[in-house]
Image 1 (cartoon, protein in one colour):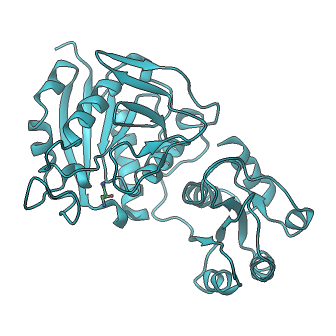
Image 2 (cartoon, helix red, strand yellow):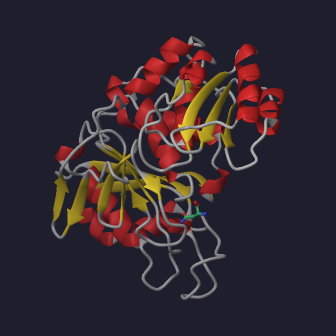
Length: 330
Ligand SMILES: NC(=O)C[C@H](N)C(=O)O
């Protein structure tokens, strides 16, 4: 009775996936099972928390969209404003798990724990990873130390911070890692152990607010490559993009023809941010002409997270200096 109250919001994903046989680990139906079935599969959760569930959507997370992100964020804020709710756990597909986690890290108005969890094997598989992951997510959510650390992903015995975590393997259960910057903690045996946390702004220290938003500005990602040209930049502008994230080669480098397209985009009022297709390291100014062109830099945010930050930034300002400040702080 004295245990914390944890609300589990379910969105679908492989953790709720079903396949025809116990050996099938690809080609299954993601998001098939409802939240009640997931809760019933892990009775041990009641040793750590009073859990209750709520189904938000039932999707495979490759289909996540702005509408659902905003709906989820608003519901999380509503629940955490309730003194009877101590923490929220969100079950989610792994494909875009890092994006939803980072988005919530920026817009959650509470220091109560918000933990995202998924699975790489469907619920019907031998050695399905979902039930243990869910138990560990609830355990972390119920730990007093989890408060105020920002949104986290708990999977495969690791606690990773929303800002630095990324999916690193297409099929392996040990897929969520914070390369180089490292995990925040472990769920190890009977202990939840924390070692570090991000110094970046998040949750109660964030300036972003979704409470009055119905949509977000369009921001496209351009992935650079050998033989790159300006066609994607022109297409983004034609589609009405208010921002472009350039996933550059190396330290956010840009091919000359693409550079021309992006310069024209800036001239039309589009905010261009240099990120990188390289998984580690901060994007810094390596050529003065990129600064002169008005391009901003994403720091260590990968392109998909830089996109979300730019979308939120554009709900507040168009001023490149202000937006660069945000990239430096979040
Ligand atoms: N492992 C998974 O959850 C993958 C699935 N396609 C999803 O993101 O919903």
